[in-house]
Image (cartoon, rainbow, N blue to C red; front, side):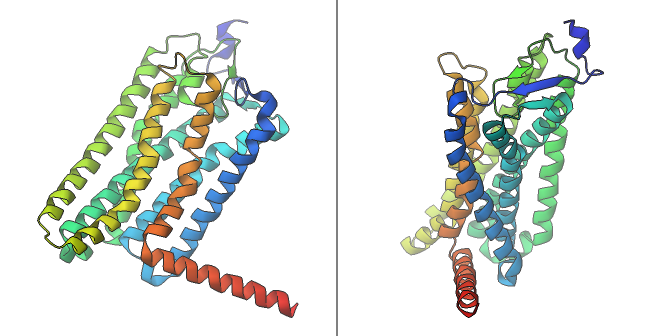
Length: 323
């Protein structure tokens, strides 16, 4: 079929085949995937509800935790329901426009997620290095403005990715060996020259990740310098505890993200299903663990969540006995 039939003016249909090489095991693979997704939704919505309900938690730190929870929920929801439809109902068809929209939101949300982690590092820096000025330097309004900046940055940086792909011709092979419309998985199906698309995606990943990691490293460098000036071991331990949750969340986000970015471009020797499974887990495991990490590591949030769950359990038990 002529390539002209698949220009942007003629909507194309793609086929998402799921986990290439493990199609027969889709049902079994869907069980942990669906479990992780449901736990992530439950945990993050619990955090959002408790923070929204408790006036004492209406602080910049917890506003950032809510922003992280929102990005986790939306990122996993962008691809997981469709992936489960592939696994359970064999619904594999997706239009070009649908594919590009999913791709845009998926990559934009991961960029916003990184911006939130940077803002969290700045929050920890102010809390430890300028504790007396914390309430004046960081307010809820300023956090909201920083969140808006992260949103605008994501739109400006990510929008060219689907725009470039929409101008490429696609040939008869429109089978995407993935569970969602990953940038490089779609680009490799084009009959045209994908050099610009490939280089833009790679440069963008390193520019965004490099810039964000530089700011985070700078924040923690200043934090470490401030801690060296504190002679109290107890104060050092307390300061470290305030950062530990953020450090764990970053370790869940950046190293796997770097692996996913490089795997498609330098994937010789890596079985396709390994990359696909890792890509899915990258956006399932962190959303599931992040609210748990902050719930365990942050005393004030942990106490409020436990209080809410205990009260809720008692109410349900009382209603059951009286019914």
